[in-house]
Length: 298
Image 1 (cartoon, one colour):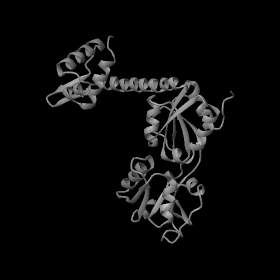
Image 2 (cartoon, one colour):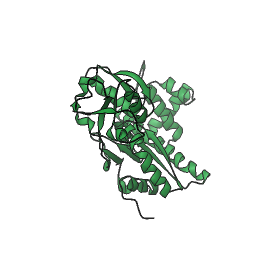
Image 3 (cartoon, helix red, strand yellow):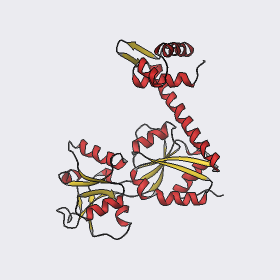
Image 4 (cartoon, helix red, strand yellow):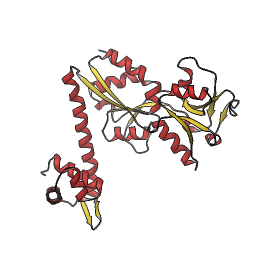
């Protein structure tokens, strides 16, 4: 087999655009040149990758397989660049970490501060994503370490205990639900909400959960932190959905009513997610050990 990264980038672009001309334009190739390269790639692999039609192209089974592996190749290349870049700045190691909103805001700041204090030669890039996105990225090898609140069926990953917490509703002390000890999510969807910003993992999760009930969440204001959610709720702006730990911590504020949710998904036991722990790179293995409470000797 003979092909190069240009061929793979071209194939990914065409597959994602479902059109040869548009795919070629994405990688700055003329359609004729792209068609020639694609034909040579198929000849090299010994199988068709695309089914041509008047309105575009679709993938064969071999094309599906190549697209999956090509994406993983480019993800690994990006990880390679990210891992090597810090060396030019005097840093000896780098770890990429994806986590859901809950972990990013509630627990990881302290955990990562402890790890970085112990490992001053290491840098970390932290990205916030929904738990399913994190699990699938780890399963595909796009990132070594994740922190999630839920598994994805069929994903070949290992989940290690990190922290236990739960999502709760918070309300102003004089709100109609303030005297309830627990409540179903569907019962509060007529009230306005204070939410984290659009694009945050918990915002996406909450909106999808409401949509699954056939309802639309009233978002009155969006803020950037759980602390800001608590303060807005205290001021009477609306209800909030936050981890219990976010209510217990932070500076003093006016009283809040904390109401438990009668939903299985409200229990948010956070777990560290890896493909296979024994295959982790050195600093990633040290980070995982730190997160689960068993720092490696060093």
